[in-house]
Image (cartoon, rainbow, N blue to C red):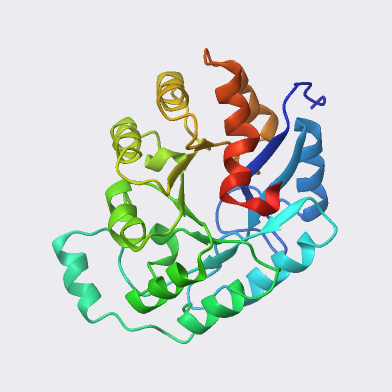
Length: 270
């Protein structure tokens, strides 16, 4: 794909980096060199990267450390992916199961969070509770104490109100992927937009938001809370960029989404 020409500085808050051998459990595989090439083609200067899902019971310590190593001397900002024992769905059955949910050896614990937050290898956390489970309360308290942003995969199994209850109420800075509505759940996306008025630390990333009206409403009503996320390698960043560049919104709002907002949330992208 030809390099995309545009007049913005662009950073990406949602990229996946595959550093382990073998294919990821879902989606295409992308190694560090290929990811760097895709970003360059789209004119993206830096990206927040996290590992793909790993098999259950493996844990993310090895994958997170590998991502941090591959981010050195590349335009990548490493995020530590966290898992946990709790069912994130929030229904009655899940709440009962969570009462007896115990952290396994491979699950992230408060000590892991503290180690990830120490130093300059990791600049935030990524949660995908629908795949990895939700960390327990003690671990989430440690996440809040770390004072680093948390990038959350949103969807029907972990809707925006669940992010509010578990993270935003703890004062955590949250960037919710897909506007909280994956796959293509317009109602959840509008729920997420409504929450922006309730929580100053809540932000949305644009990955996999295919509705022009939803994107335009977000950028017009909350221009300081929208962050560009491509979802690479599932979507080429060229395609994700064009979805925003063709919107009917003020240029200033677009510039905020591409650069100012992400770098305010994650200063390492600056």
